[in-house]
Image 1 (cartoon, rainbow, N blue to C red):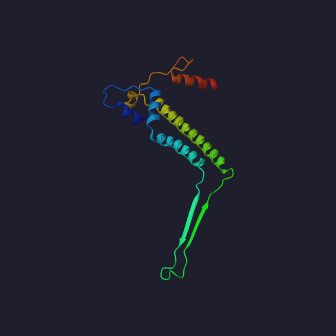
Image 2: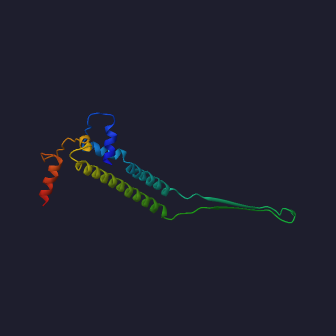
Image 3: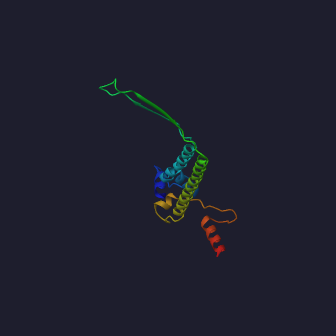
Length: 164
């Protein structure tokens, strides 16, 4: 995925394009098609909430039986009308609650997809080759974490050794 971002960022420029990790993650979150498709599931889930809150429609039915075609004087016309409505007893509230819970689950899944994509981009960003086209296009400024006094890799290594 990161190589596609590099090609998009390079464009017509003759000089190497410099991009930071934050910019790479931001671009990935904005332009990843799988993530964009996943985000639409939130709207779909919200639409299901609306549908869950709807009440059933009443049903009006009718029937008409004409007299016999060849002997109209022997038969009679029959007409029937019916009206029905389903009365729900407690189901609607549970249905709405289930739909809202499903929306929360969907939001959590989208957030997890965003975090996974950011992790994937960060991993590719820090594991790029030292020489070659990708390294020239990705010349990040060292990221300093508060209280670490060094770049990102050194900070991660320091925290890793502290855990042991």
